Length: 114
Length: 113
Image (cartoon, rainbow over all chains, first blue to last red; front, side, top):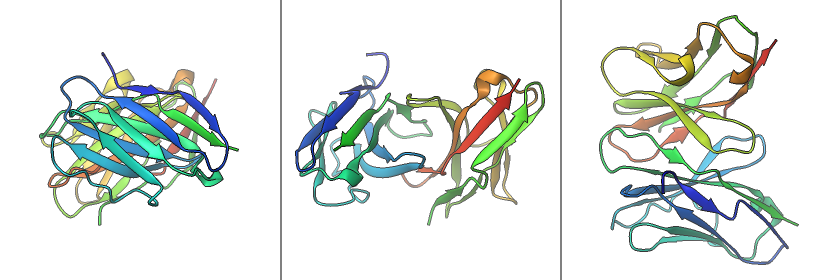
């Protein structure tokens, strides 16, 4: 596609349920990032994928959070046993490998945990 | 450690006046600097970047930014603000030897008619 695509755009779930958020990066972009943006806050780094290298998971806030990237393209962020503090907008971004490229962001997935 | 500071939570300016949104950074290596804009319920849109070369960088929608190495700053500017510029602005830095982008907390720009 022309841009980074994220789904769902909105997700309302009950506390304790698992959720999956999907990101389809720009074709050819080998680097993929997940960020979390809580209401009125800046962007919190979660995880970074680069090609076939092991992902940088240093930003994941707990072991309830995990992410994978299949075939070097689509990525799924999974949150298990959701808590109310997980409510936020989850942003995905991609960029081309190497060099000084900027990030291209999707529209985000807004998660609300009741 | 890499970090970005946006000291102003909010900037208010009248339409037609010049605007400045401040950003300072800290990196251990060579900085790659970026500005993004976020409109309500949207993702972040890239405005401009500084990698190397001329300290004054021009970007989208008439925005520009000046890299100042001695002051470790990368302030966003526009000569004449528009009401449609009202949005949330984020500064970001990436250490040239790293792959992570570090974002500031954001500055809300309000342009009043």
